[in-house]
Length: 337
View 1: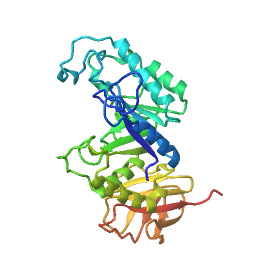
View 2 (view 1 turned 120 degrees about the vertical axis):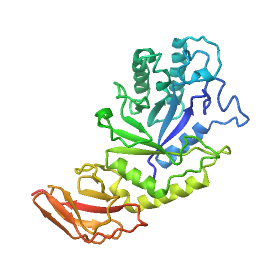
View 3 (view 1 turned 90 degrees about the vertical axis):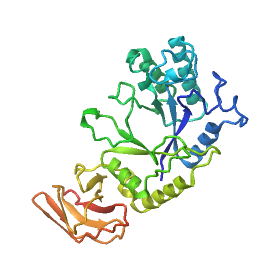
View 4 (view 1 turned 90 degrees about the horizontal axis):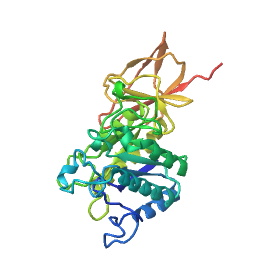
């Protein structure tokens, strides 16, 4: 059910997963594989109509000009020297490669800025120069930066890592995205078998949608390049759920009812979708002044009895199955007179 893919082009170790011309520390020049997986993925994504985004780490433990080291670089035991301006030139040269060699790119997903937070301020990063170059090369390419702060000019949406966008003090006015792992690790970990259940992930997907956020679900491939069987099973189960309930997620925004203890709402131009995550009673009363024409259980396609009086709608004959991830009720809007 995914509509876009974010793939690592370069991580904190400085190793590039594509054929970079400004570095030999990449998968083509430094491994026996000798092929460019980013090129293969870009061709496949275009074939299947998926938007392709590139994760790019601004933090680089390998490049000699990435200095000061930042918080994490002290473990690298590199020389205490470097030319920061040259590193930024290298960074922008790699970004230019990514934006000119692989066709239309949906977005750049920056990470690692936080490593230099103590020793560099915004101006040192020359973010506006980098963002301007990206938008000049591909105006439709979106920019997000996982810096855990308010967005700055040039960024197109705001990301939240491993948490729903519930902190009102951090919310800006841009579109939102929540990124989450399927267990505890961003990359593959042989010892990390703390997998989140499909129910937990679907409920998080729904909770994100109800808060106006896209949901970015991470998996780390195994050393042989394949996706873990546990993750493939979960992806398939999420996909099956979306086949039935996708209309309550795709093309919607957060609904007119703010997130509640019982769940969340989403909406489009024709319907409001009530997502019940935590409710066992057979009736549910919700403050809703919008006139409703009908209520339907999205799984069974059967009508749900309801009453709407003085700005409160009460849904009746709710039957929650503990095996069900979420109960979704579609409220069809009355047409305007």
